[in-house]
Amino acid sequence: MNLGRKLRHLQRYRDIAKAFARNGFGFLIKELGLPDLTGSRIGLKERQDARSRTLGERIRIFLEELGPTFIKIGQIASTRPDLLPAHIIEELVKLQDQVPPFPFEQVREVIENEFGEPFDTLFADFQETPMAAASIGQVHLARLHTGEVVAVKIQRPNIPAIVATDLEILDDLARLAEHRLAWAAKYQLRDMVYELSQSLRAELDYTNEGRNAQRMAKSFERDPHVRFPSIYWDYTSRNVLTMDFIEGVKTTEVQRLDELGYDRKRIAEQIARVVFRQIFIDGFFHADPHPGNIIVLPEGVIGLIDFGMVGRLTPMMKYHFGSLVIALRRNSTDGVLKAIDGIGIIPEDVDMDSLRGDIDELREKYYDVPLSRISLGESVSDLLSVAYEHRIRVPSDLTLLGKTLLTLEGVVTALDPTFSVVNIAEPFGRKLFAERFSPRNVADSVWNQMGEYAELLSEMPSRLREMFGMMKKGKLRMDVSVSELDTFMKKMDRISNRLSFSIVLLSFSIIMVGLIIGSSLGRQSTLLWNFPVIEIGFSVAALMFLWMFYSIFKSGRF
Image (cartoon, rainbow, N blue to C red; front, side, top):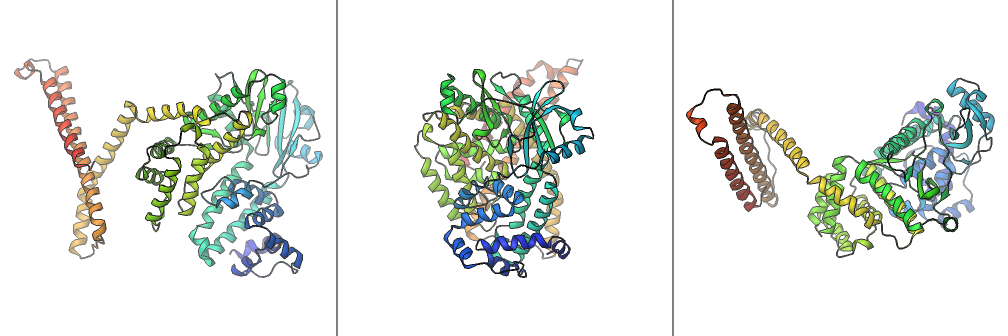
């Protein structure tokens, strides 16, 4: 552990040690080799209270006692079922960060320091009592001199310094835990803490939230049924965010929606369409669509707010996610395994028989179940639970997708219990799969593979020389067991067949391009051009292509 850090933050270490002890984790202080920093013994009643609670409850209370940084880390961790077991996730989602607001004098000071102008010059009117207050910041209603009514989000004074201190301590504790505790090293605790810390640091910069809102608004700028708040960049900084104030009815106010004559089924459908368009089309989605962040505006327009947590899906992630859904529907364990391998990082020491067994069990759960009865959020969460059991690390954005789908399903079914999310998702899924197998995407994929094969061929002579050199010196060691030999040879067959296929296809492409260019540039008539060379060449190439295609696929080793 960094001794300088420890001395600099000694009081905070004491607070953490006391919270450990009060919640039944005092043994960790000894196991980590830390001195007794509690300063006093924990009472019998406190120890009994801790023992009466579940592990998840003790972790939640521990985090709440330690304040903003630990609460936010816990809230972010509640979206990661690939990192933590389900019974702990259930408690982390209950974390509360409702705290008393900080004084208006500090609000004024933060704003004036950020923009370097007198407060009254910036705002024509500013409500001193906040609309909402949380551990990181609070929101006030205000009016600009140009007349716009805005919501102003102000970060608590000194919160970045508090978070930085806590994250330094967490990093030290995680490093020490990996050194002393086998389970911490096994689950790569420090990497886990680093990933959660990065998410928290991003939330502390309000300009990120502003850019997220602007990007989503641009995607829906031609859709009159969706509204996003405009960002006022002249009044926005790292610690202050100023945006349109959107007022409407929350989706949880079902009775009021009915009184105002809204069609709840239509509203549920519109919300689902917005989220699925973000996921499947844009690959950039609102990752926290809970009822407080979705507002119903006049004429059934859907308003979205709070863009601190967003998810991103790359084309490759969407590809593998689509493959996973297809494999589950086709009852293919091998397909699911392949998709998981593409999505995450499977440890080298994973028990493949056990992993295959868990996937078989997951596959059976969804076998022959009508689409209308499948919960997309639950299916993704089930997959992430399998990933956790086998220490498979998956991208954080994919875990956010699972949380988003679960939250979305809760919102829309509260509006209309008969609503099927899958019925809305299916057209987007079909479009995604159609794009995946479109001629353009297939051609791009083939072209990219041709480039990879060409690079492999160019490197092959030097690699072979290197291998033969090692053989001559007796340094080449091959460790292939008999049980693995057949699999190894099949893979080699596939590689050679693909190389052959690519080389032949490339060769004929070059020949045909040469003939076409020659026929268009040649000014003198020759005997060769009296024959339909291009047509004959194309026919020969097509026949050879089909013959090789048939031969390779007949062998089953493409």
